[in-house]
Length: 134
Image (cartoon, rainbow, N blue to C red; front, side, top):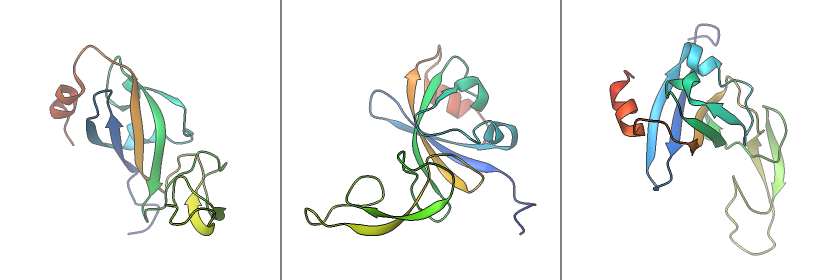
């Protein structure tokens, strides 16, 4: 399947204030509305099918599993010398390793988007997810 004929699709993981996580797959117009957002941006819930909710983008990853880092600008995958944080687990204090990570901007190559709730809506989130067709 070529890149042009591939349908735009994101898997969204939403964390609530109680420690629960909900997943939803968004396609086409809903997915297009998320393109160009950066980590830390506010998202209106109406754009992705959650009326009266507001979310904050907290991270994500691409199809190959490379994570988005908030301190790297752009959409591309680059190799950086990391000493901790997203994309690298510190095994020994002071050790640095060159790892591939993505920039902080969501693009067509993003696969998974992590969000947290900043403003709750009228209905519980699990009712809205169960009622939507995936």
